[in-house]
Picture 1 (cartoon, protein in one colour):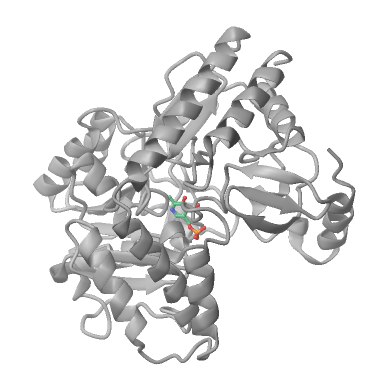
Picture 2: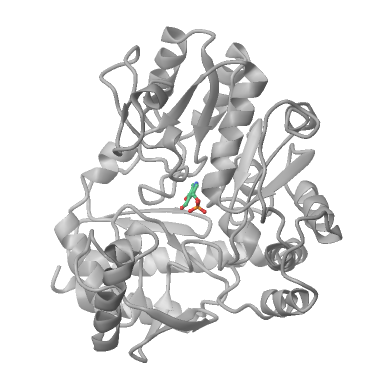
Length: 428
Ligand SMILES: Cc1ncc(COP(=O)(O)O)c(C=O)c1O
């Protein structure tokens, strides 16, 4: 495949945009080569500026659960735009989408809309701190909750040591309030809680991790966190920015049968427009301004175009009773096909899958946390990535990402993908 125009466009972009991109992973730094510039997309396919067509397994990093340019979303946005694009005043569509979201997701009474997943998680943490009157939080290595300061933290050297900033610009003062735990290791979390008694406001987790590949919680892990939080008056925050409205209409809470205290959303909830949200029961949400003391705001929050896209998306998900099963079946089919193709060629691998999230790790060990995810062979991944790209299959340009399966994918698309893997596997 030729990427001539994308290469030229990337060079031009680098003159005026840091690294040529508005979000680092798009730059292909982890895999090398030139990022392809998207021109348009429809259904399961994205088309680049060189005229190449790709079967898309990134899907804008998750939002496009129903495929690109999904007609009900596009129509809703166009109709709304004709009536004005932003008012900074309450609108009925905000209440409509809030009512629908509250009816779909277990255990929440109120929801507030923001503009990104980052904002949702950042606001959830502030709310948890205000509500509990405690400062520290526990997050898990390898889980990503957006780029706000509290989350850009690397591990300290033990349960009583503070985390350290993992980006310049994050202060030591902020880092000291974030403690890092190991995903799927309840004992480790208990130690952190015990050695920081009555100081932890919240434990925040991706209930099914998607930012170190797809990593399911081991049996009893989420239940253990729930019990630990209950015993120590800590709020459990599920970051469902990836999993919300994807793994079930009520997200991972519904799928796993574990209640969180605060839930964060992004991606699917905006149908491809910039939307995030956080939600909880009344007791917690009533702590927010203007009725409570915790401040949180946004000029474009609840923007009518964004709400129209999100509402069209949620309505479709809510009405389509077969959707989640269909997605899970397609993902399972892909899993089996890829596993067979790699096995036939003796390529060492592990595949993780939950619902419509799946990741291929070039490692023989089970991938259950950040350390085991990091053991994957990155050189093999790079070859795999570029091989797939050249065959018209667009997967995330990093070994630490989940693939997002969309309902727009046909079984022909899946077969084409599996055939591509079989070809590439011969040279891995
Ligand atoms: C689980 C999770 N939380 C939060 C975020 C941040 O969302 P956004 O990129 O919309 O700020 C992401 C983004 O990928 C995510 O995967």
